[in-house]
Length: 80
Picture 1 (cartoon, rainbow, N blue to C red):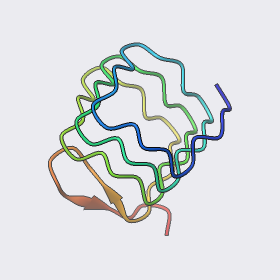
Picture 2: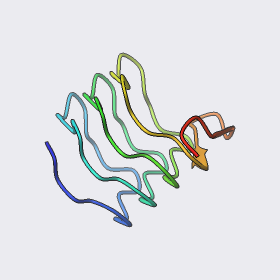
Picture 3: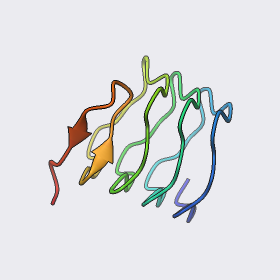
Picture 4: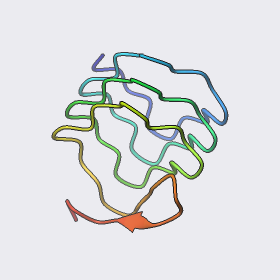
């Protein structure tokens, strides 16, 4: 947790049940990644591409969203 993965290319990576609490994923590309059951509490997801990402049972509590492409292709702007 608390890693700096900003602008990382993590396309189709397997992060099942990974602890990404307070991780900086700003502007990262996670298209098609598997985040099933991942812990993303307080993660910075601003500008992150989550298109096609598996988020089932993921904990997104207090995560930051601004211009974040969600798994269904919608844009989330809670924290702009």
